[in-house]
Each structure stands twice: as structure tokens, then as C-alpha cells.
Image 1 (cartoon, rainbow, N blue to C red):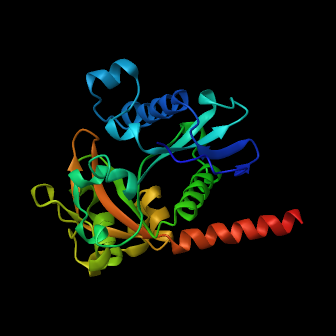
Image 2 (cartoon, helix red, strand yellow):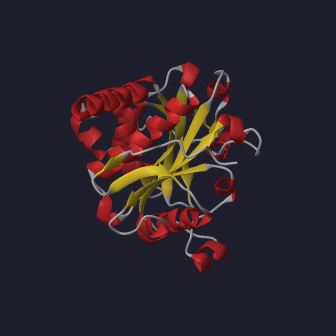
Length: 267
């Protein structure tokens, strides 16, 4: 059972963010993921994915799909230009757990009571990679977090390619400056653990290192996010994956402040 479509009128011009309303919209989000992850980033699809030209797995059947719609392109599947996949703990527990469990030990997070939210499969169509689209996705995430009273969200974020040494500077920067406290710390599973402590802290140009951090991870950091102990190489996805966790109080407050400002402007 997917979440009720409680998001209303979260728009900027012709762009709207909301949850999917049909299986056809899920398929369109999966097709967008395929174009970004497999065509652009050279992940390796299964034969079934390649034939359908859609990225899919078992989690798609029970997660919630957040999408950005360009109403100039269409009001349904044809208008989907951005997406995020959302899995709540109360849902994951009924379906075998979270996606990230294959890469990271989530024990510290699971000790927290209440809802947890796993974020994944974030991508935006090449022609829409602007601050406006990403802000809409974050507004959608914030509305979701408020609705379900989620105190913590987490997920995997990626560096392109499978050689950690290529990313030694930003990985080391993240390890030395944004490692999660023990109570929030995801840890790469022992059999897949790759150290992020590749350079001493005093050898890093912090400003230059931050510029090398992928935009999605920067977004999490700006919300006060933390990173995992260790990374994981995912050869199928052609990526080095880092675990990220964010306390949602700052996300929720930014969203509340925006709603207040918009209400005042309308009044």
C-alpha cells in the first residue's frame, strides 16, 4: 500500500513535486532512472532491465516514488523529469528490510525509535538539472518527513567510477570532517569495507576538496548530514558508495519557514 497522496500544490511555475498516482508513472520514473544510471553513468543492467529500458527491483513494488512533473510536457508519465525513492521503516520491516542493508550495517540507526526513511534512486533528467528541480525534490521530501513524523533519513550516495583512489581527496575530506557520531553511524559491511581515510587531514585543501564532493552529498551536508565509516564499491552501479544520514529537524524547519513565507506573500 503506497502512501496517500497528501502533497498538494507544491509547485514552481510549470514544475510540481508529488507522489506517483499510477503504475504508468512508476514505469516512467524507472525509465528516467535507466537513462541516467545506465545510459549516462554506465551502470550494468540485467537482461530484463535492458530489454525494458527501465531500472527496477523488488523495492519498487512497495516504496513511495516522489516525482517532479513538468506540466508543459504532460500531467502524467510524459511529464516526469525527476524522482526519488522513499522507503519507511514501517514498510521495510514488512518486506525484508532496507535496500542499504546489503552494503552497510544499519544497527546504530535501527536502535532509534520511531520512523526511519531511506532515500534512494535520486535522479533528474539532463535538461532539468537546476536548483529549482532539486529544491522541489527537497520540498517533497520535507513534506513527506513532516507527514510521517520521521526524525532520521539515510541512504547511499555515490562517487562515479569504482576506484576509491581517484576520489581520495573528497573521501578523506568527508571522513575527517563529517563522520557521523557513533549513535548515527552507518558502517560499511566488513566484507565490502573500503577505507575513506586515504589522506591525513592536514594534507587536504578543504575548499578544493569540498568542490569535488558530488552535488547530492553536498546537499545532505548543508542540512547537517553525516557520512558513514567506510565506503563500498558497487561494480554493477559503477560507483563508490558512501552512507549518509540526516536528522530531519533542519529539513522540516526549512520547509515550515518556506510555507510561512509563501502564506504571508499570498496574504
